[in-house]
Image (cartoon, rainbow, N blue to C red; front, side):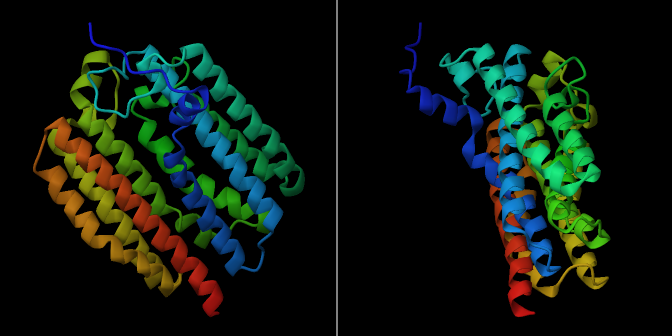
Length: 304
């Protein structure tokens, strides 16, 4: 019987469970929405801060619930190459992780109620959609990630809903340019999830988890990955051409070499180990693209 990994401190276990490094992908759309509020002269520091903290708790809750239900349903086992979780290591129980996830969602709700008070009914609508998406992504019998809808949820939650929600609580107006500028980040969020599902495709097929990767198969699934990456850049350039994003946002094109490397890696292999490397590089690409895109919007504000 293999020796068990030494149990870490409770704090370390919780930090591993909430995956703080992954929270940057929640911060990116929040920062983008804040950047457009700044450009449109509607930025409010307190509302922005509360929206950011609420979004982080929403993401932490989603992460915890996802780990809990994937573990209970057999999607997170030692056979997979996903990052080791406290549940898999035996450091925490499923009940602890579930309760932690619910507490995070309740905290996000409490913060969201203040945002509803200052932002109105549309903030309530966006908040309800966000909470529903975070909970239903993995929880319940209608778990979105198990029925081929995980990618759509990732696009909406880490793209348009987060960007528009952050912007609206400050400006209290809906503008097309804000909504469509969320598209590249949303597409890249889906690319990260999709390559992860490509890596786990065979395992997911065994346990009955339906993702776009299992439904499309390896070849068409890879084509979709290519399409997501290319469309993110096409959308960015088109937005600039139709004057819906400033020229400074095109600084995100500096991430193209990394995107090309990712496309080459994923296209040439079906090996889960190599696809796991592709996942890491896709995460890095989303981070670089997103930070450059956000930087471009804030730079435009200072250059006006």
